[in-house]
Length: 293
Ligand code: ASP
Image (cartoon, rainbow, N blue to C red; front, side):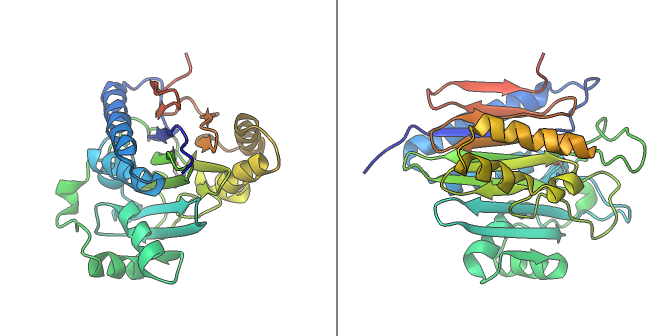
């Protein structure tokens, strides 16, 4: 069997603000990469590693996803997630899920246990319950509202946070997963790009991509698929990713994306102030960054 040197990249959202300190996130992102490097060394699949990384990010309470989520305008926590397996082109997603700790696990259940790609609201909740996923019994005690300090924008400006991970495993398989509580002060029922394969998440045989930013813009340019299809058409991963972020900027949106291609090349462009991100190169080097300077 052919083996490839694995590579991985994750993000903790492109809503980073210069005035805030991200020491805890930097330490945590490195821990996640180290843990996932060990999993890849054990032979775990790209899909398993992408999901496990996102679960660690969700459970940390440090990012605006899973435990770190913020409520909508009604005070409810509606969480979104999606994932895609590049080897099979299968995808799963949940939107506006309430009451469960790990939306990414619910998205995986949609992919593996139903004939559907996306379940929303009550239907997503019922599947998570039927699958025995970890429920939240006391939301006020569970959620940490990690976005404090990143949400100090005028209402309507769509400030935000998300987590995601893209993986190339030793068998050459690619996978991506993304999870979020969405933009701050969102309307009840609002879903952004995160739960939409092609917009917020994509993986095929060429590249895996996970986006973070003002989801309304990422949906309108099909950001994740657009990037991977650029690679399929012969662009470098970096050029395709930068072109996607440039297009979002032209439309007035902000955010970033992470990606890995089948050769293990990594990319992490953004046009916001910063983007929390960490990676493992195919040479085995680990990197962590929030800002570019
Ligand atoms: N893209 C997410 C959304 O629009 C937010 C984020 O990535 O920060 O829901």
